[in-house]
Image (cartoon, rainbow, N blue to C red; front, side):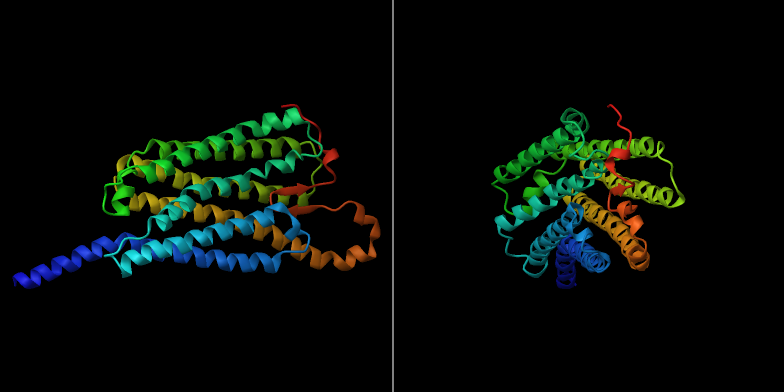
Length: 319
């Protein structure tokens, strides 16, 4: 009986040890499968013009970064399951943490491009651009510095610990750098979304809107809300977890999920806009060829960019 009890204890301990790694593998594999599927759909519904836009290329880059993160996570978590008696090389582990913590900063920078819809660089004064983009650029620089300090702390501290998991546990709970990064991320996204929606409303209220334009603006409104609300929920969950739970496994799962949800949200917005544009082009191609007088002014809805006439048609507003 004692041998059976000892065997059950060994098996239970082993299962408890690999459970977090197993959860990482299952969750991240599902997210990566969704990203690859959405990437194919985005290319199918894209047009030659939409593929030239910066937001399309940034979406592709975000998917590549998320895919690299998934591969690194598969290596670290897979080795913990299949070969638990040999630790993962520190370089791979550090690379995984780098992509997991620095990727949200890049994803949030994609959302910042929405403000360029209302303030094109070509026609907006430099001082006005500084007033608008000064805060988000500064806070992103602060986030970059804070993340760099955390990564340096992770590499330099607790060298005496036997495993990298213990290493992560020692630098996780109530870490001031990570806590500051996630707090600044909330402020960063809140500013970009609130300013975007406010200026979008003030600009479009001065334009004589048709039903089509109103519908497109309503789509942009819901896209902006969705791209902010879901990451905000995970940001709050991350802050609660890092201040109340010493285990880094749950907080890391929230961090990875938040990153993938952000990528999928921006990607779905791009697919939605590209799909609408693709359908409209297919429907209007014969009409446009027979009505050349309408070629000079076309209303288009593109990812995070609305073109209603020319930029000069918008009334200039001081900050």
